[in-house]
Image (cartoon, rainbow, N blue to C red; front, side):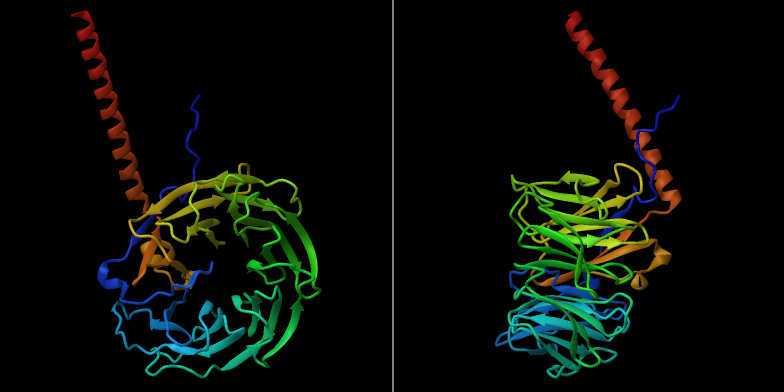
Amino acid sequence: MSRQVVRSSKFRHVFGQPAKADQCYEDVRVSQTTWDSGFCAVNPKFVALICEASGGGAFLVLPLGKTGRVDKNVPTVCGHTAPVLDIAWCPHNDNVIASGSEDCTVMVWEIPDGGLTLPLREPVVTLEGHTKRVGIVAWHPTAQNILLSAGCDNVILVWDVGTGAAVLTLGPDVHPDTIYSVDWSRDGALICTSCRDKRVRIIEPRKGTIVAEKDRPHEGTRPVHAVFVSEGKILTTGFSRMSERQVALWDTKHLEEPLSLQELDTSSGVLLPFFDPDTNIVYLCGKGDSSIRYFEITSEAPFLHYLSMFSSKESQRGMGYMPKRGLEVNKCEIARFYKLHERKCEPIAMTVPRKDAVSRLEEEIKKLQTTVQELQKRLDRLEETVQAK
């Protein structure tokens, strides 16, 4: 009876391919601000990244095809009076981007086709309602002109960008401490939040009620990030009591015990999760790391399967994730990241090799295994000869 050792998966051989030097964005001054956001946002038209700016906050917006060395005098979006902490492109309009800043405001900008020719200082709308810096902005996935913002005043505001008014407020009674992450469910009916009080909450924002809550999903004191994944599940990244990084998968209806909990390493960078609902793959990118790990989520135990890891020499200061409609699917690309170095933005394509390439790879592995076995036999014979003498 044959025993299957390796789990069958279409994505077992997914590999990361960094772009060539002429396809990168060189000489960009990435922000030095210490904040656990990606510092980069991309869509099929533009790549935006938070950059160093004197006397206020700014971010750079470049057309996707404008690769190579970036002119030091390139115009930026520079309407904030303090450093920008988070940016997010609107999923319904590729020319609209939102930014949250230490100046306590959220601003929504319209970028002209072809990119900026002059510095952009006047936003389409300024959203004022937070009393402390705004560290998270997230657009509603299905409803147009709905934007969520979370600030260090422990308040989540949901805005109607068309009118500039806050339509929903989740105050400090819901989150008594700093909010680390916020994520919309795929249909936009729920939000998942992680907070400094070591609780992960699933909230129905229309009613302002907490649907489910988990205390201490990870025992450590470092920040926890949580995202919705496949139907009825959330994934969290955090730290153990011994400061080991962990990833856990939870059923939202039964939060007592995780479906899967895996320890990864002892690095100190917070892991930012990116979930692809089409392939059920979650990518973990740590700030300060030089690698991207990826896992597949399935409906049967053990639910969370480690696939592989993309590694490089340079550590990452931030990461942008391209929506699926911006990928080159004819080249078998299933995801693309934009990795921020200190002075560079580097695209990394995640690709599924074609079937013939996988077959060739498996044949080469078999040949190598046969060679290793033959070498082992020769070594054994040599040892026997030496012992006989």
